[in-house]
Length: 112
Image (cartoon, rainbow, N blue to C red):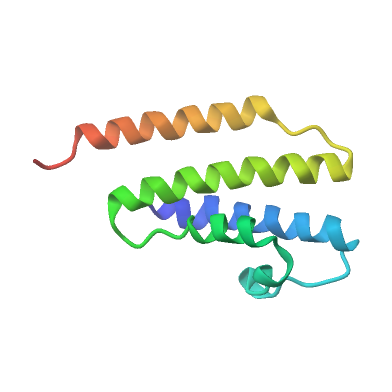
């Protein structure tokens, strides 16, 4: 779970901030740790972002990670297009496969 908070969440927040930047010509700040994202993201997207916040329950963690992956891909595709890049689908697919392997291994070692 530590990797989620130190790697996945910061990259997701960075991508969301880049999306806001592409929509505002990088003229606004989303605030420290994205505290103003709510002001700039569409409600549906912000609601999905809130679903990426795990509450400490391990089963909820996996749901939050899945939502983060969905949101990152959706946002990454928009940002890549807006900035003239190609979204790295191969790398994203590899990461998703890795997450599934870790999840399956985690489920094998669950206490009864």
